[in-house]
Image (cartoon, rainbow, N blue to C red; front, side):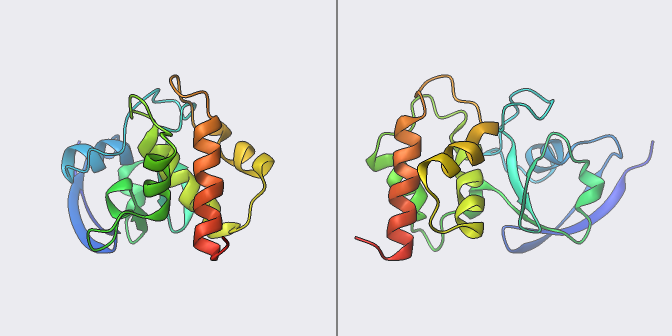
Length: 159
């Protein structure tokens, strides 16, 4: 099967790659573009480790084909920090020790950023529901929720 030439934007930069029509977006990000922050956990859309945003919508990149990325805006964990400065969510995850093994962390951070883009002032229940698709086997979630809530407050300019 012949590969298809794809032109898209990833983390604000135009990129091109050749995708087998059967390759997932996750495969293309990791294998073609060498963006390995996005993780493969389940390959069925159940764990959230592969979370990215596509045109501002949170998606499991293991469920999207790479050829569907044509002319899209894709954001991965590699695009979260800007100009060498950690995003407030990344800083708060460190401050709150909201990670252990780190495997799920990129997907949770991308999902949390997507939440705060839609709702800059979520309550705890909203954060828990939004992140319910991201599984973590290490932390127990409380530190993650506190870190997201703290980052949201900082980003709103609250004390």
